[in-house]
Length: 472
Image (cartoon, rainbow, N blue to C red):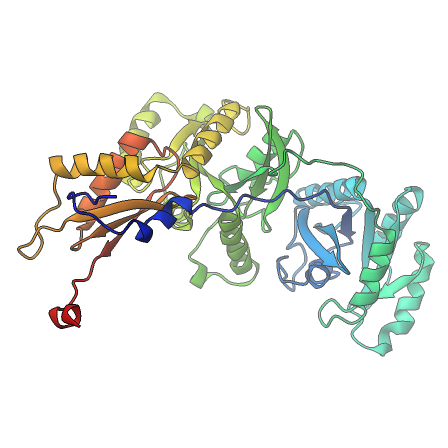
């Protein structure tokens, strides 16, 4: 093996790089589903965090924080199952709360077991009595949980919940964990071995897509358009979505796992309460996804929030597709303005594919699937080391690196260290200017594509051996 200058290097030093690859996502079997329901602020999300054993559901001491139905993976005594957290259920809700209640009702309809949570410090209200009447007529297993039972003084109040006719009430403290183990044992005894519905798709599982953007840009509307149902609560009030919402979507003949996320409003250090934790969930959703659809409002100028979202996606190293929503509202004058805005604002992602859509009317939504596939293929692309070095040798011969400190650095060797995203390592005799690294990235894209995927270039400078060390 020779370096770019024609000198020999030890092949053993480099052979391992060709074998570096990302692990494939393992297929996961379908899991039975537990729906957690109850009126607002009875402690459902706190209990969900206790059941799944980690703090994922957004919790705040005000009613109405959870609005969508949000799924989490849980494990108890070696058995896996899915827990669906829901917003507060009110029988006579209107407006936004009516949409939240509809999500809870849909969760109950699609679950294998229903866990009804009642605040033991308040007791059974007319809402719980209405829920009980509905569930007594259903044929699904129902578990009654009395929450916020932090000590023995509330046990008499727990006993009064027998009046709901839903069976034995199980006292639990979601905050302290009291009684949670017994409750989990009961849940496992009620759950079937397999769920009623099997949504598996392929050996590797659905590709994960994160829907991200600023508040009120249309993320939940797009998810509802893709699923063909009211999967996420939609309201004109910005910030309706708090928790990431997972949905399996069939798009262009393929199953995808879409995750609707909370809109990013402020910098994380200035956020508080549910907004702070929602921003952390959004960041986590991006990092666990493979590709992100960044939704932009084509009817409005690019904002600082838009650029912050783009920066977060780029820094996460995920593949990216830009979707310009509300395109049906854009006139000719606005399109001319957008050209200038995009030239200035999207300098960090000139490689991202752009799709003009309307979540409201469904315009061009079908074009998202080809753009997602292109981005993911680029994200997974590996360039053979021999071809990479031959191409780089020709490039450097035509345009050598700029002189630095009176010396011109030489590129000895190059390899692609990893995929997802494509990461290249250049071994050199000196530092390469940032402008020259950008030049190499641009030429890499021209030669090998990488449309829709970030490309990372790392430089490793070879240290010269000291004369004394060489003699020894």
